[in-house]
Amino acid sequence: MSDPLTFRLKSLIITTLKLDGVLPGDIPDDEPLIGSPRFGLDSIDALELVLAIEKEFGVKIGSSEESRQALASVSALAVYLRTRVPGA
Image (cartoon, rainbow, N blue to C red):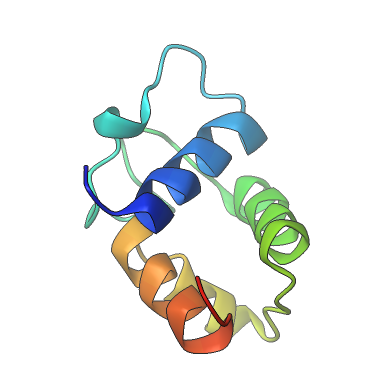
């Protein structure tokens, strides 16, 4: 895993959602974050994750459609942040 932003996001996901026994390398970059059978994240988890991302990166994720797109996968979230946060 060579991308520092991707690693940071995966670590944030693990910490925020208290995914015991999960390492950043266990989360595929392109696997859906919400509804994934592997991690079982639901809408409450998505809300917690959005709040953690907003706090960590100082970005506001507006609508539910915007958050759905941003949380499509770790890769999608990295792209989302890179287009909105300078230096991400």
